[in-house]
Image (tube, rainbow, N blue to C red):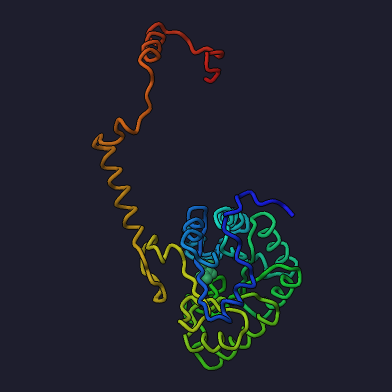
Length: 304
Ligand code: KIV
């Protein structure tokens, strides 16, 4: 067994089994997205249970208008930063669009990269149907996998846009069957996005694995929100299911604008932001400059 790099007082990684235990105990699970070291640290320090490195990164971090453009290399880099930050929470990495849709082999290779190169604890994929085979393949290879039903942003175009799913009896029934199938295939948890609350509640009550809702009501076993939405770091309207707990974007704009004003008005930097040089060294420096002495490759510091 390898020795952890950090001290014995470091928080212990939440065992995966804790997810099912929390559901059985009726303790709601808390998940939030994170995309880099600072957001991962905030999630860890706030004591969340699970951190999702969502491919929503394509939108909230990289400025695309959908999650489709997220690449494996981008997601690996972001996930590695988050896992460096998170010791206790379970870190779930989103498999990006087309990294798993084509074959089980693709899914295994992509998921393997997240575990080996980015130290993710689990991966997440969207959809049912042929994706159930992917869940089975990943679980069979010992890779913890989270399923995702309801609004599945990678295929939102097929769903008619970013809109709630499972709003007819037939669609709700299909979702319930898909949820059971995902559990039977070996998923460790199920994200339900933009699903009518009574439908999500029914699914949650029938499954043994925990459901994590986003726009799916209080009957889910846990909740997830996008970091930037929760903290008010984005611009424009938010989905109705978001509760914005802070307006950090406005605070940040105000801070940067005050910095800009201070620079332009020469109020920043001040003496306390600068480094000193001894009076004799300064005098010597001025004499050297005035005498036109060239910089020696072997000056006394050995550093040019
Ligand atoms: O990518 C993401 O952030 C997600 C959540 C919205 C569940 O999939």
